[in-house]
Image (cartoon, rainbow, N blue to C red):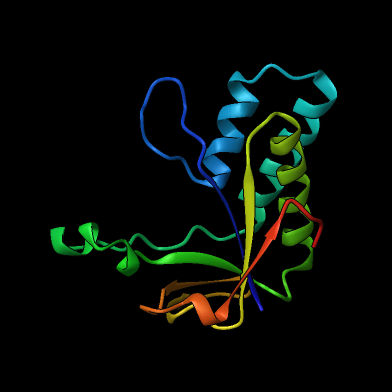
Length: 140
């Protein structure tokens, strides 16, 4: 099983969706929250950023950018226990600050184009629906 955390967060300056980690960073830097939440959020973000390899950049043609199904997506492996736990702690803080997070789980994420010990990057199948399980705001 592979897991992905997503959010539809829009920041104040740009009218575009941000990824889960980017939304968490933005909230940490600009959010109104108590110091304990900020500290916990920063600690978990720092851990993720130092313990999860940065995936390679995948350059796409203009046609690929229009077809979102061909955009490579990062998924955590089931064996990445600590990473999943830290991401779930980040999810809890985002939700406590009114940012909706979806946790997606798939058995087969698509065509894998990159893999390391903790994650895969895959181009989703055209019909990923049969493989997709959505877990809304629940602990893993």
